[in-house]
Image (tube, rainbow, N blue to C red; front, top):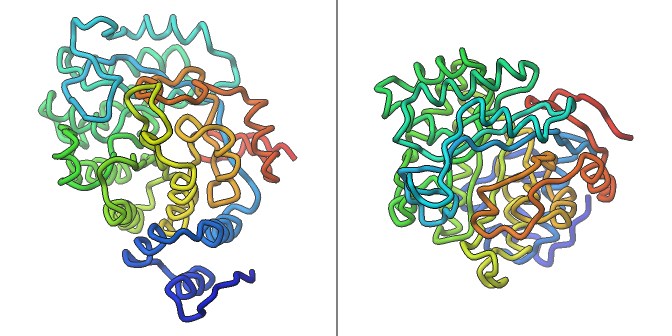
Length: 367
């Protein structure tokens, strides 16, 4: 690959050489890339790394997002999903009520339920166990990817159990993987300023470490675009890179573009397309021990997702059916997408669509 760089002794040239030789990038390198406006070079480097790891394959899954409760004790500054018990629109569904909802949208191709929700302190831990058990008994062939590390930390607090004990009970009920949410920005200063009154940095990482030790493969995220610095973002990536060195338990990294609370907010209240693509590309370059970087169309839109597939992303997420959290916070994107549209989107980027299961086992390749 020939990339033209005006000054061959520049920091960018050193980064290019590192990437081409498979050397790990540093905090300084990552911050430099964020401060650079050379998106084409950054994207080209990320594309080279992705092609080396995944070829032209781009993965997707037929899944459904489910939310048992939106009642939450936390009051994160960026969240418009949460409610207090008794508020208009607050809900806490039983397993049977959720099954009624699922049956309206379910078809035999659905392979995964993606389950997250509020930290509802008005119900016991057993409620969360029973929620999974009800779904697992009704749909034994659908993988339960459920709860964030922050939810696991919350369950441990309300139950008096250890992370390991909480996870073991959930696994006995059918849990197969953890979702990636709850990471936000892995900075305790950020969490204090943004009122993230849930798992701190060490707790988030320890939950995933424990899950990996129990044999669970998990997902992890970063919610960028508010008060954090570029250095905060790179440190976040390095925290999860270090844990991946230790456990190799993460399946994919998902950068999440912050959404404004007001759906009618103008473009100045949103991350730019430039910033979104740069974050995906830098994530691919920094996370050398991750197989996949996801372009999350719910946050960045389907057309930008298509472009991201040439800038380091190897996963286009899934069908979802009806996403609620980002849309409560002002996302203007579709709430879901069809399998046929996902295949079209991926092929339109010159890539090969691959339907997968939760663990990236290939179900069907669409040449």
